[in-house]
Image (cartoon, one colour):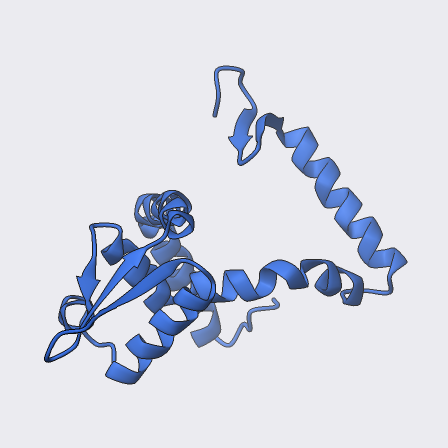
Length: 162
């Protein structure tokens, strides 16, 4: 929250109130209704869906955070991350490189040396990823409690819709 109670900053906008956010939600709802449900919303969200899918998966987040500490080689990343297969790390790095978040530099040595580093665009992703991590860490107890309550209801035969 900012100095004025009830406001907060968003990327590119400052001092956004809860009323502003409610108005945006109402506008989104109206557009969904006018376009017959979710189809119009999906079309308008499509440009960012691929990006969010890439940067939102667990391996990409780990790679970006690791490369935030500096240039790394493939096997070094694989050792530090742990649990990721060679193929999955390769696919993750290729996707991040394709999206302009990571650079791959091959050095003509024997054996070949390949370094990976974040681009400026990739470094700009560290801020929102870190913020999400801080949020998740700060709310883990509440999330665990919600999960336990949900599971208890499900175990008691009361489905998630009741």
